[in-house]
Amino acid sequence: MIRFHKVKVFSIWILVGFLTTWTISCSSGNISTNNKPNQSGVAEIQFWTMQLQPQFTDYFQSLIGNFESHNQGIKVNWVDVPWAAMENKILTAVSANTPPDVVNLNPDFASQLAGKNTWLDLDTKVSDVARSEYLPNIWQASTLNGKSFGIPWYLTTRLTIYNTDFLKKSGIKKVPATYTELAVVAEEIKNKTGKYAFFVTFVPQDSAEVLESFVQMGVILVDGEGKAGFNTPQGKAAFQYWVDLYRKGLLPKEVLTQGHRRAIDLYQAGETAFLASGPEFMRTIAKNAPVIAKVSATAPQITGKTGKTNVAVMNVVIPRQTKNPDAALKFALFLTNNDNQLAFAKQANVLPSTNKALSDRHLQDIPADASAIEKGRIISAKQLQQAEVLIPTRKDSNLLQKAIYENLQAAMLGKKSVDQAVEDAAKQWNSRRS
Image (cartoon, rainbow, N blue to C red; front, side, top):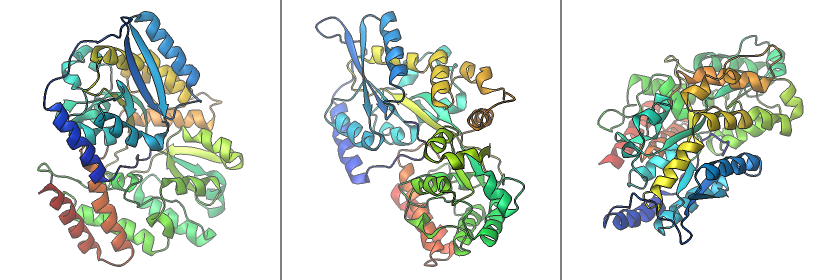
């Protein structure tokens, strides 16, 4: 799934219902650690991806064929699932005791199931040598309570995609690098053109971009005891920043009701100057809005005083219910090894999560005749060494975003003061902890 805004989360009662059933079923015994071949003596494993057909069909057919030729006792059945259906399908499969053997998710959603012991514990399965091939900060993103539940796959760091014509018409000579600069530029654009500089969503179930901005501004979201860490001067300043932008009319009113897709639509229509997205999206702009693509360029992502940059991670996980854990792990490590990660990164315009693949010249050197897409990919790769997953990996991180976004919206609409909104958000989060 070459999409990096936050995957929508199932309503919590459905999640709890499925996983309670799963927890009970797991308590009766341990899974086998040996492959269980079918009657033909072949271990069949099912591999699920998120919406990678038909664009990458040839890549995966070749990869699977290569794997099977070197592992003749293993057969891989690839199933591509529409991204919007993945959560429903994996929850249903787990509850019915019919999960795939290897599945492509992301740490945010996978961590919610990791808290219910859904995935294979990789710390006892993956050697230190194999683990050392992956970027340490990226491996850490697929851990919960000190246990590894996923293997990193492809990545992106967010860029600022901007419309050069828009900036010229507005008299802006420098792309904003910080949120402070962005607020100044947003006001200049609104005054000179009557349009908005950018769109960012505050819908609780959608993108976590605003929540990530808090961390970039120096806010601690959750303290060491799991309590709200944002009821601080830094947290109040972050709330105030977004409230001020909205009340000054520098954000569209629909930021409260529409998701990240609206940001894409507005940019492609030439209605906004900036879009926060990964370099892979430049191809989408070229296809959907060629006129806008011709005047689009890329710059490093906007950050706060901490200078932190985000990375979005796709990983692969192995359900504990798999009947072929060894074969599943062998394929997962093959899928994500240096050579295969680099090959996929080149095709998909994303980034690999292994040290060797990331050091390839393809991702480090900017040719004199580089296209906007190539420049964006290289800027993104250079950011990756310092990038991190900004939102804490927690089984209930969706509830943290919900508490903050709901109260932030109330302050934006003038229903609460900023101080009250911060306090209420902290109470809402802490009450979920008690």
